[in-house]
Amino acid sequence: MTTAGSALIDDLVVANHILYVEGVVDGFGHVSVRHDGRDDRFLLACGVAPATVTADDILEIDFDGVVHDDAGRRSYLERFIHSEIYKARPDVVAVVHSHSPAIIPFGVTKRITLKPVCHMSGFLGFATPIFEIRDTAGEDNNMLVTSAKLGRALAESLGKTDFALMRGHGSVTVAKSLKLAVARATWAEMNAKLQTEALRMAGADGDAGVNYLTLGEAAGSMAINETVVDRPWDFWKAKARVALAGLAR
Image (cartoon, rainbow, N blue to C red; front, side, top):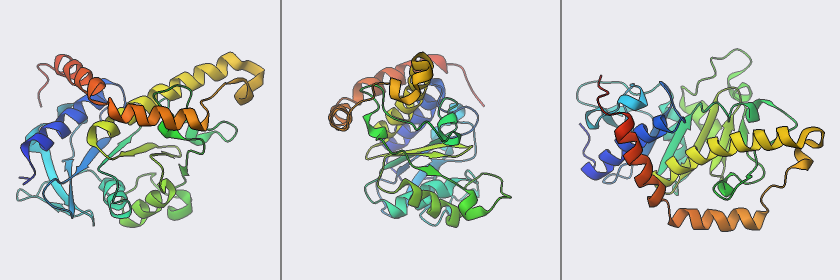
């Protein structure tokens, strides 16, 4: 049982449900948030599908990836994604890891990089980092970030940015609030779909045929989006409530 505030726990449950309904996660993927009463722990669900997460599933985990639960429950194998990012980035309040399908091609192709094509995705920047697990785990690995060593390497790839691709795996999104992290993960998937369609329309012109946001536009839109995140959050929350009505484990 966690000692975190009930409002934060409820928001984390909702975050899981939103990410599922918006197509960012499926049976896999996870979202975490810093504990609101302890500066050495964060909250993450036990190893269940995001759509089925309840308040009773929320666990406390420290920055070494150790689960603190009287019932002895285990969390996700990749909790080290979260623990090492929180350790490296004091500014980060929430982390989302997903395998959203439109994102993955941008982590495995060499000629095209993920860039913001609309005003909701300026946070992506213009040099999206790509975490290459082979550099740390070698050629023979299971593609999962299941240790502090791998989590550290991912956090180093992320650096000071808000979003990183994970080659052949998915992505990680961070933000200074839980609502913003959920929004960014959702908008990143949307941007990937839009960019793919724009590139298809550009045809032989390829990347040069797409009119991406400028650096100034990306920065300006990102600042605005941070101030209005409650609006999409409330909509997504209501939508998820209806979509998941009656769903139980």
